[in-house]
Every structure is written in C-alpha cells, then in structure tokens.
Image 1: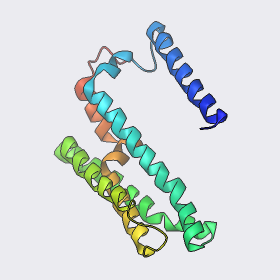
Image 2: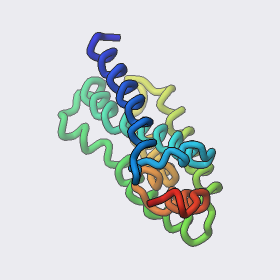
Image 3: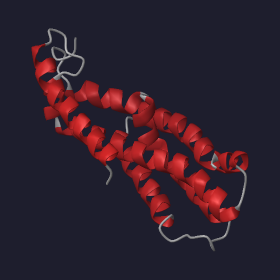
Image 4: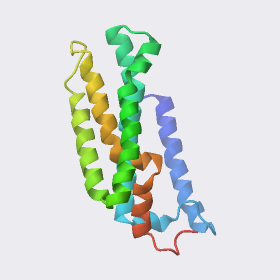
Length: 173
C-alpha cells in the first residue's frame, strides 16, 4: 500500500462524499439517488462491477503472463487474448438476443455468471508449467460466459429492461 494508492482511495471517497449532496440538490440529477435504494439496481451494479473487474484483469494481466512465462513478444501476447475478445463479442450479441426474445434475464445472467466463475476458477490452478492451450480455453470460457456480464457492460437490453421494470417513470428525467 503506497502513498499514491492511499491518496487515490481518499480522493475517491471524498468524491463519493461530494456526489451525494450535489445530486440531492440538483433539479435534474445525473444519478437519481432513489435508484440506489432499489435492490435490483444494486445487484446490477455489483454484477457489472464484478464482471468489469474480472474482464480488465484478464485483458491487462494475461498478456503480461504470456510475455513472462512463455517468452512471447508483446504483439503475440496481445493476439493470445483474442479467444476472450471473440467470445465476448459473440456472447454479448447472443445474450442480448436471448434476453430480448425470451425475456429470460435472470436465467441468462445466472448461467453466464456460473460459466464465468468456472473459467475464473480454472485460472487458480494453472501456472507456468500448464499447457499453453489452457489459458486460451479458460479465456474463451470467460469470454463466452460474459453473455450476462458483457451485456451489463455494453449497455444492451438486460440492464435497460431491468431498470424499466423497477424505476417509476417520475424518477427519470
């Protein structure tokens, strides 16, 4: 824990502390505070934050892993994360279509998060001696599983449908 990290944490907490009074006084707030009292909204925020954290961890740390353990170039290590990105691309569109057609938000998100958790758990058992294909398979699993988390990140139908179901018309400007 460095002074720089501590300073950033303090700045974030101060910013959050300033957000609440400013949004309460605003005639047309950017973030209507009553939304944060809705349990579904909180679940969507936690799911989105968790998914984003995991996605950024994969995108930022795996290329470094490939460079250090397998001795590949930076360009090649960037290419190695394509299974994750392609899985994400397919899954976001497929997930949005499934949710929109079947109106199966809960089931789709549950399946997606379960598959993503299995892919993430797979990363706990591999090391430098693991086969080269293992991280690629796990990334594809996480990417395909992002059918739920990816739709939350990309702003496609799942969060919008959820918010429309819980937010009274008068809260939104």
